[in-house]
Image (cartoon, rainbow, N blue to C red; front, top):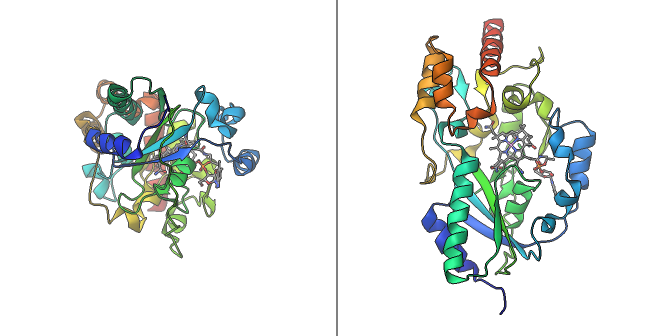
Length: 312
Ligand code: B12
């Protein structure tokens, strides 16, 4: 029997589950010379894991035997922490307002795969979110879900760039996208100009060494003196918040992302100077902030406060 599924079937199930949109491409080898240049320039900082599995980066089909297609999905998260609206307060990146998106999106993708298998029992697929050596933004762009903005993030015309990406690789063929979105950043340079550390080297090229998101989450060593956290103590949304496409979005978040009230409480108590490790431990459960240790949070807070007092 031919292993084919109509793309409309996938899309209507995905929208019902809570994804904002999806697109499909035929799985093909990628030219990763751009990535190699990025690594050779040292822009991955200490994220050595990015240097591994180059064969899979080049050829995503190695992830599933007889794979035919990658279906890319986007999930909206455009809501802020209440404290983030006040420029004088310390901030968490808005994706950490919700339960851990890796788990939430993967669960939703498994749900989708099971719904498809109810119709096509031999549908074979593996879901991925963030952690696999997959070029998620490039795949999403090729699947017609948006364009790559100057801050290197995928921007969707309807949902902006506060979107997360997940994908499934399957051995079924489907109807592939035949038109990609054109680049609508045009002459806007808001993201480039807004970064306090000038981490955007050139259109689309991020130097992680200078990115507050890297510094506050991934950097296990002391944050360099020249870095200005600009009040950000977990992740950073400065380049996203300066993007006009994030002001136009109608849907604010996917129904399967749940707000975690404990992280709101944690941020408020940090801003009121009365937080402790117990609250941190409660807040980090099923939250993106689980990625850092309590001591790292403390040193981020200290660094952000030093930056604030140096600017006064
Ligand atoms: C490493 C990483 C980081 C690093 C490096 C950031 C970076 N821009 O690469 C750090 C820690 C700094 C980071 C920060 C953030 N991240 Co991050 N990160 C990743 C990760 C794991 C890998 C990205 C990667 O491979 N980078 C290497 C560079 C070279 O590649 P690239 O930027 O993906 O691709 C560019 C080039 O390759 C080039 N290119 C041009 N033509 C072609 C053609 C081909 C064939 C190829 C291969 C490439 C290519 O264009 C691409 C776009 O610039 C992805 C998940 C994933 N598996 O993709 C998430 C991901 C990119 N991050 C995400 C998020 C949400 C963030 C933050 C917003 C979190 C926060 N609020 O703090 C910030 C945003 C900072 C920023 N402006 O990038 C989302 C982005 C969603 C979106 N809308 O695009 C992703 C996709 C995770 C997910 N599953 O949703 N991140």
